[in-house]
Image 1: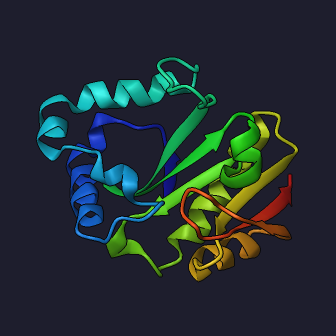
Image 2: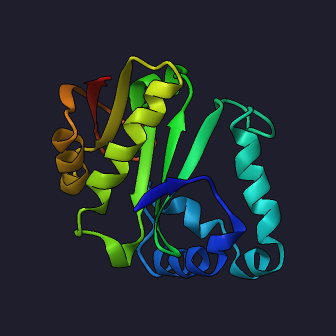
Length: 175
């Protein structure tokens, strides 16, 4: 298992994962996958990969976003999930989003991949000069809570999330 930068090499598996996510009920974590168009990916996946790489440099970001590096967790040629390491926090991320966000494709959940992806992402954050990493999760997401705590997350507090109505739990990990 490895964290890799997005690559066209994983196109087929990534598209399969998008289809899995789109079969679920939309939620805060999976909503990005409902914006994706499988036919568009099949035709222009290389453009998508280049856009993701540009975000690392802060290029093409929507208003209010910060530079971030997105990695894919892969096992062989299979896309397992994604983790985003945000280079810094803004007010919104300080409250609700945190430095790191991740998700695992539905068919690979509850197999230890969540813990592994966060474990592998922490050194990436340290390489960016981040000394303390903020990670948040929905209060209702018991799996993510376990992943964060297994990786050394220390609970700080719970804050309301006006976007979803589900409180966010805020954890810190010192690197």
